[in-house]
Length: 114
Length: 114
DNA sequence: TGAGTATATAAGCAAATTATTATATATTAA
DNA sequence: TTAATATATAATAATTTGCTTATATACTCA
Image (tube, rainbow over all chains, first blue to last red; front, side, top):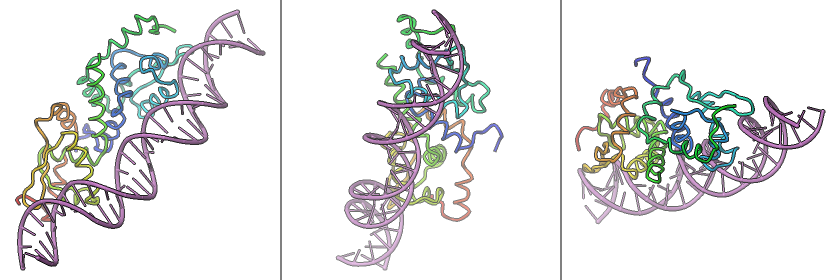
């Protein structure tokens, strides 16, 4: 097997993580926009612990990385992730979620600085 | 927006189904080879009901179709599935599983006719 | 320093998932 | 017809998942 080929078990575990609409939408949003936890809480209308737990799964898998800015923690795609191109390929097939960011901007709850 | 939400949900449900290494490997095998239940039972070394239940999920989702030939039921990818190209794109990123078919052939347990 | 805010973690629970065992159905062959 | 084979389905049990509530940690600001 070529060393660029993803193992089946690994691929399945990645797809399992993406196989949740909250996490999948998070990843699609992060494709173009860094986001902090409180933005996800508002976008998904979920509790803060629920959002944090989804983010932890993505982070533990290595798909996203975090960066603290003041009190907030911003998440972004980890472009060094070994299987980044596999994920990217999937995300490219998904419908744009930018209107969710636009809604935040209109409500004035989009966080753009620390 | 509602349509987009539905599409993300649909994508997530597809990825969830593929997010199991048995089902994912089944789909990869079916990409190039029709298979019957007893072949999967041997390949995965799982019980027959377990295999049938995985196949039922894939069939209920519309990803695979079945065709009876005598006592056996052969499964194949449903190329008319609405999201076939999405699935195909994922399968193309996965390593070839043909050696599993070759093993069956060497053992003489590959089923090629009714 | 203490209060307030943002986020993470832990514990517990209900729902979903997957495997197993037992049984039913469909087909073939004696 | 009966027996054997292939597969599906049902019932159950074990495991996993994702939510909630409660609490801990980290940072900012007065």
